[in-house]
Length: 184
Ligand code: FES
Image 1 (cartoon, rainbow, N blue to C red):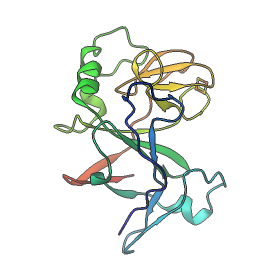
Image 2 (spheres, protein in one colour):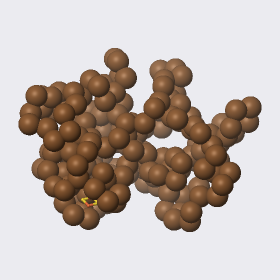
Image 3 (cartoon, protein in one colour):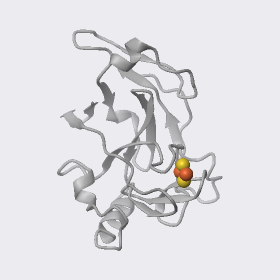
Image 4 (cartoon, rainbow, N blue to C red):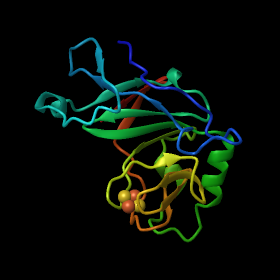
């Protein structure tokens, strides 16, 4: 049942951190198909194309106790990175404050997380411009920044500046308990 953590943690808000180094725990976990008992993990840096059986896995389960407030993990899901972020009260407040801003892809923050679970943001970690992987803690809006062509996302994963047309996608997911989510 154990997921595998394959990277280092850091506080993205820590003063003076290098924005290229400060954001992720890298976790790659795939929950086995129904009836199986374990999870299979491999490093996020693995760039090989997923095999057919990997693609066939529809969902993953993740233990949220592995994430501290102000941090995120990067899961690998259906061949894509997936950000699971434990947002701070300041991040949530910043996102809600901009609900009525002039948004390119208008969406309220509360529509991007589960009811009563504002601290957990789950988004597909590919830039909606050309698919690079944004990093957290850069950009002008306190959220993610895509260095490929300069797209800025806020702490709700909404596109705020740059060429990307859409918000970071929120996948289908559910809370199985207070500490476990099932994605997909
Ligand atoms: Fe992200 Fe172009 S791929 S800005």
